[in-house]
Image 1: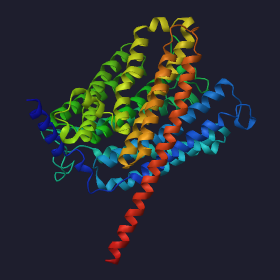
Image 2 (image 1 turned 60 degrees about the vertical axis):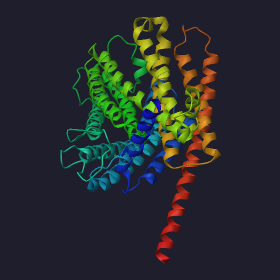
Image 3 (image 1 turned 135 degrees about the vertical axis):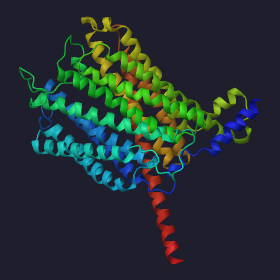
Image 4 (image 1 turned 135 degrees about the horizontal axis):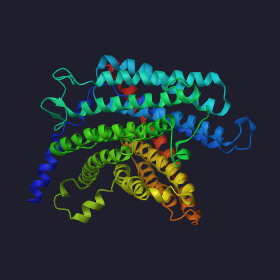
Length: 496
C-alpha cells in the first residue's frame, strides 16, 4: 500500500507542470544578479560607515539624526529586495509579454536611483539626492502598477489559453496563482501609498491635515510603539512596516510554490489558503492606521492561513530532496533514512529548514509577546519591548532575504563542494544568529545578563555575512560560466 502511494506521488511529480510555464521564455538572471549585487554592496558600505561613528563627515549621532539615517538605509535595501522578488515572479510566471519591457525600463533605473541616492542622502543630507530618491521611488511604484496590469486575470484570455498551467492551479477556468499575484500587487501598492502619505503629513503636513501640524522629525516605529496613544502618522508608519514585510514574505512564498513540485490537490489547497491569508492580513494592517483594537487579531487570523500553506512547501520540499537523493531506493528506505536524505542538499534543505525555523524564531515569539502585552508595556519592560520590536522585524527581513539567496544559488545551478560549504555555513549561521537573537529578545527580565545571547547573535551574523559572500560569489561565477557557454554555442551555430 505504502509503495503504491509513493509511486503515485512520484508520478504526479513527474507529470507536474509547475515549471513548464517558464520554459521557452526570456530569463531574468542578469537583472536578478545585478540587484543582488547592489544589495550586497550597499550592505557592505553601510557596515563600514557605521564604524566611523565619531567622524564629523558622517553627521551627528543624535537620536533624530540617527533615526532619519536608519529610515533611509531601510528603504535603500528594501527597494532592491522588492525588485528582486518582482523579477523572480517574472522568471517563474508568464505575464503579458508586451508589458515586460516597460516593467524593466521603470523598475531597474528606479531601484538603482532610489537605493544609491537614498544611501548618499542618509550620510550627507544633500537635498538633491533626496529628490532623486523620490524620483526612483516613483518609477518603482509605476512599475508596480504596470506589473499589476501584466498579471490581471481575465478568464479565457489571460493567462493565455495556450499556456500550460500547473496541475491544481486553476478552479473553474480561473487561475488561482494569478489571482493571488493580483491581490498581492494591489496590496503592495496600497500599502506603499499609506507609507507615502505618512511621510507627506510628517514633513509637509499636506496629507491628513492634522491640526496642529506635527513637528517634522523622523522617528522609528520601535521607539513609539510603547506609547499609549498614537496619531494617524505614527499608526500609518506601523501599518506600512508590518504589511511590507508580510507581503515580501508572501512574494517569496509565491516563488517557492513554482519552485517546489507538489501534487495537484495539495497545490490547489495551499494556493487557496493564500487568498484569505493575504486579504485578511492586508485588511488587518490597514486597520492599524485607524488604531482599531481588533486590527492585530485580524492580522493573527490571516497569518494562520499563510503559515498552514507554508507547511505544504516544507513537507513536499524536504520530500523532494529525499527522493532526489535516494531515487529508486526511496520506496524501501526507512523513515530515518528518508529523514537524513532530506538534508542531503545543504542549499535546498536549509531553505526548507529556515521556513520551518521561522515558526520558532518569528511566529512563536510574536505570540508570546502578544499574550503578555500588558507586562511588556510596563515601565520596567520598556527597553525589552524595544529590543524585541527591533529584533523581531530585523530577523524576519533577514530570514526571507536568506531564503531568497538560497533559492538563487540553486536556480543558478551552482554545483560542487563550494555549494555544500555555502549551504552548511548559512545553516549554522542561521542557527546562531536567529536562535541567539530570539533568546536575546525574549530574555526573562530587562536586567538579565545579556552578553551570552548578544555574542551568539553577533557571531551568527558574522558567519551569515560570510555565507552571503560565498553565495553571491558562486552565483556570479555560475552566471559568467553560463554566459561563456552560451557564447561558444552561438559561435558554433554561426560557423555551422
